[in-house]
Length: 97
Image (cartoon, rainbow, N blue to C red; front, side, top):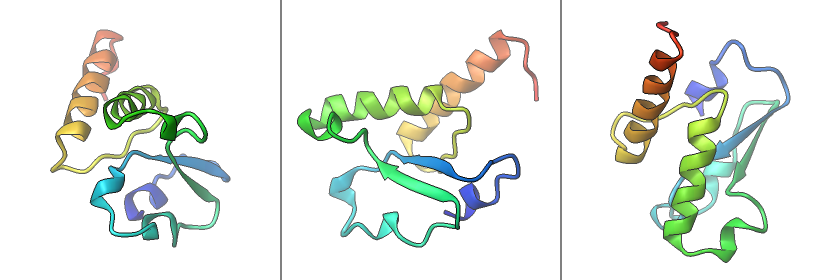
């Protein structure tokens, strides 16, 4: 929450897509306490819950890899793979910063 709230270029309101494994959460508290103007959503409503975990992960991967801004943590393989793909895409386009 702190990292997302500190992004200078965000316009308010901003939808924040949360790619978090439900089985790892003890409750839905991750959806609470966000900075004013940040609207957290979990999964793609209606479509997401109809699919098994593997398909949900693929949906999360695609949404995160195509997002304008991606905030990850340093200990997640999922985040690392998305970060690597996004970095490679930027390098291919000639973006170096």
